[in-house]
Length: 150
Image (cartoon, rainbow, N blue to C red; front, side):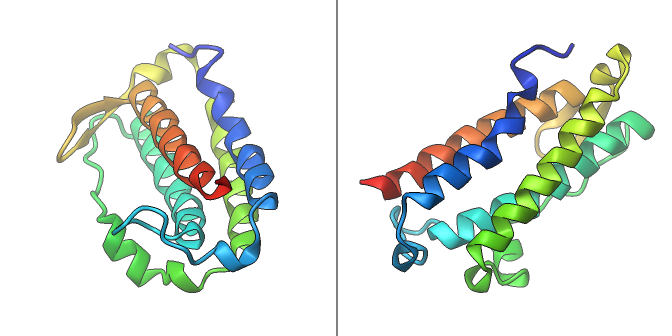
C-alpha cells in the first residue's frame, strides 16, 4: 500500500543537485570510500539504475510473477563507462528517470502495489518492496555523496 513517504523518492534528485552544487568539480573523481564508486560514478550509477527500478516495477504490474534479471553494479559501471560520464548530464538523466518512475507509481491502482516479481537473490518482491528498496538505496547514496562535503 502506498504511503505518503514512499513518494518522497521524488526529492532525491533535487537533494543530490544541492549537494553537488556544494562540491568542487575537481573532487568528482575522488574515491571517498576505499573500493567504492567515485562521486562521478555514484551519480552515473543512480542515473543508470533508475531505469532498472522502473522496469522491475512495470514488470510486476504488467506481468506479475515474472523473474527479474540481476545486475552486478561493478560490471555495469565498467560496461556503461561510469568513470567518464558528465556529472551534470547524469543528474539530469537521473532527475528525468525518477520523474518517470514517480509518475508511473502515481498511476497505479491500490492493488497494483501488491503485485510481485521474483528476484533470483531476494525472492518475491512486491511493487512496494521495490519502492522500499529504492528508498534505502537513495539514502545510502545520499549519505555517501554527503561525505564529500567534509
